[in-house]
Image 1 (cartoon, rainbow over the protein chains, first blue to last red):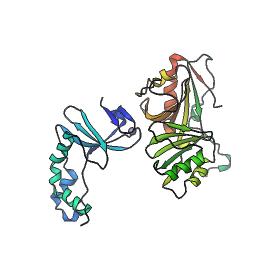
Image 2 (tube, each protein chain N blue to C red):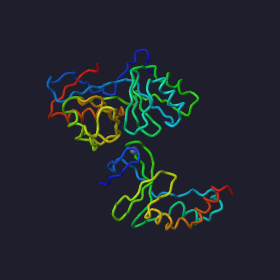
Image 3 (spheres, rainbow over the protein chains, first blue to last red):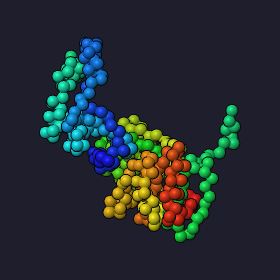
Image 4 (tube, chains in turn blue, cyan):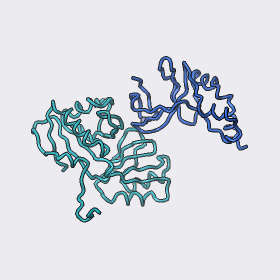
Amino acid sequence: MLHITCPWCGPRDDNEFHYGGEAHILRPAAPEKLSDGEWAEYLFLKQNAKGPFLERWSHSAGCRQWFNVVRNTATDEIIEIYPMGELPKSPEGIKAYEGNWRRQSAAEKNAKAGVSGT
Amino acid sequence: MADLETLTTRTALDPMDIVIGGPSDAGVTLTEIPFQTRLVLRGLPSDKKFTAAVKGALGVEPPSKPGTVTSSKTARVLWTAPNEWMVYSDDTGLAATLTKAVAGLHAAVTEVTEHYTLIRLSGRHARDVMIKGCAIDLHPREFGPGQCVQSHLGRITVLFDQTDETPSYHILVRASFAEYLWMYLEDAGLEFGVRIEAAG
Ligand SMILES: [Zn+2]
């Protein structure tokens, strides 16, 4: 069994948590400007990493808070736990974030353009 | 249509027809504490107006440290999330008092009394019964009075706190899981002897 350290409650068994899938998927601000292919990429394509992966977990049987985890999908080693709305600080986490194909995707560029007010 | 005049209040465990009694030297005692006022309080612990308003109504500030409990003559306040607490009290009017106290602030009070029931498990073997179905370290070195935890007990989600060194645990369980948990605790306590007590 995996032990996950909730940032509030401390280490707990993994059956107290719900998995939230890949972290840092930004919703496009102007979806109508995306092609069907780009929209489908945003909706359906996930990073299927072997190695450090950035994902969301919720401590559903405890404090019900969401947080981010850098987990090595091959070894289940948990490398870093960090709050929602922030980016990873560990070298493995930064590399996984920057190396994700999504950073170059039209959907993410669209989302970031919306955030900066265009 | 139901005759509202003759409806009687029933606890979550009423359908079980629990018989009070059992061996006097039982290792654990079980008690249902029904209808105690239970409120979900939400607000920002960083908001001094909020914490002061809560203290005014409950006699104590809500705990900011995860997994801890603060208490006063009026209420016991259990940490359940960074901006949420469970309040226990014998004051049936407390929902109104607390709602009034935090009015106008970024806060919410929700009465959840009948959504749950509270089961007290007490006795020299209470810890042995708890650890059969709970992965939390309840050794006195790690867990004692004034601490609470939300976790699994017998595979269901509960909130419990330890209230004395006996030890005694107050286990908050959703009404629909109450019969299951009661039977689970009776079964888990069988080897130590179980006495059923009425809420005093
Ligand atoms: Zn937690």
